[in-house]
Image (cartoon, rainbow, N blue to C red; front, top):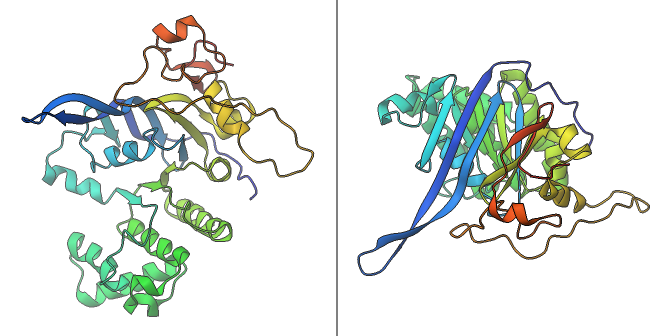
Length: 332
């Protein structure tokens, strides 16, 4: 894949802003099922997403990436913090007030087959979106669905087929069609291409880019594949154990990572040439239990440069270089 030229993240207005967002899952035990603790899936995440940009969210499995996306959309109840969309605080809106944001915020899931009803024709699945949110007639909805199918590279005759009659890439195109049906401003791509072959991944990413340019979409692109993130995104947010540890432009993250965790992730990327040599940063042990996170810096139990201060004092997520933020006492 060729790296897409990244855009300036400050060229346009803020679409989405998170302030100290937390998502805890209670642990219940005993006969009375009392809360005995919490799984701290997302811990004080703050970020800004600009109109028309793609912000990648990366990290190991279990770092809170998907939970963050689901919390933004309201699929998981927010524990604490604030979420602003187009300058409006949305986390405490009532169901009726929040309904209008359904049209503006959508999600593309990792498994396109699991997100489709196997007993329902795909045309009918897409038709439900218009039936629920518009006043179109039956024929108008049919025409709109067929236009949607063509928009994502499928054919109108696919309207009457069932999900099992499509390939994985075609199913993901259906998922994309459903996501863009109501002309949203913001789409969360939750591992949207991880289940696809590499050649199909490239086609889907190209489609997402084309739709972004055509409709001025903003993406929160959740992925574990750093190569895909480098190709697709403008900025990158790195998460570890529910915490944000680094955020900057793609070029800054990949050329000069400041946090040792980011350095370790990047060092694990396979090199395309035989003679390409770079020292591998190996992490010792597994990610700690989010129900009982370490004191101080969450990464200190695996960090190759950790010192005594890391065990007792949590580093602030601050700007070390222009538009380059990291949470590390020894960033760089």
